[in-house]
Length: 182
Image: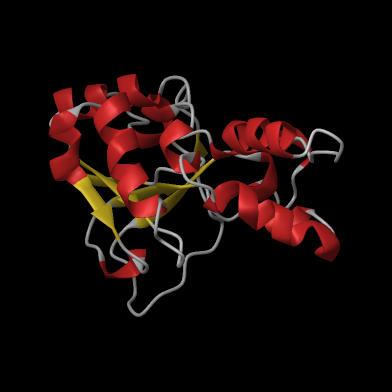
């Protein structure tokens, strides 16, 4: 079984990293806590007059490199490999990619190890990547092709309105991916 795993919001804790970077950059401005988010794109949580500030935070050098790992993610990836699954990281870089692309590679090397660099796919269109499953926090994924994969949502507050897909966390992955036992 080939399993694609998104990075931001699934393996790399974008929400916690954003909150910490926002508070450091703008200590006098309120932050929207991850638990209260209702939109997948963080900029959609803020009024128009603060959107430039939001973009400045996640476009800053070092932002993606510094994201903390989501607890349990690395262990789940290693367990999936041990089960014989072909696990690939599949992530979409920002359009303004100057820091994002390199920092995603640096994050993978630091948090998962150099061997995972060969399993990293950066693409603007995940629908063209062949797999059995895609684990992603983004509720809607559109692209040029009809996906071969089943989209399983990584549970986040901003995607809970989407009821049409299976969902998991790193604490529930085994029961979701292998309901009959692995």
